[in-house]
Length: 169
Image (cartoon, rainbow, N blue to C red):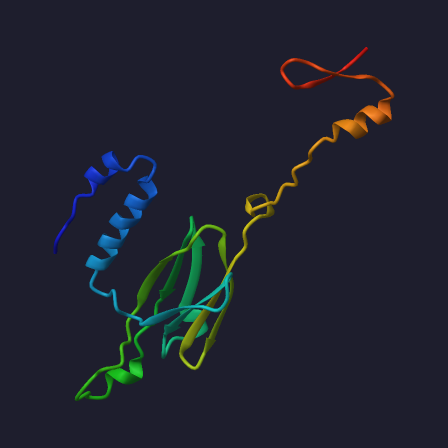
């Protein structure tokens, strides 16, 4: 197993510590043996809706646990071995009866909205909800009309040498 040292990245990328940590975590996760089980799909349904599909044939809803913590979705499956399968002599055993743990790094403001298990497929629905304070806002630019202000106040308008208008007292 190879191990990479990402500490030089921490010196060069000021403010990108989280990105370097994510690269480091991805390298550690890729080194684990069960990285391909269970197979999964990630789909974008619309601009703010996503879906993760995991093939978890043989797992009951009570065998699967979903948890989000600090922007990471963890899906864990733990299945007890069936006693009835031990009595048979298998010539080939291709159906996996093992537990798993999958981690998905969620983007900012993404939350899990639902999880459904049908026909051996776990479908996790995700929604991105950006707070109103972080959404782009258009700001109108107001321009004062000096002639209309002078007419409203019935005062004299004096122009200084700098080109700015001043109101006479």
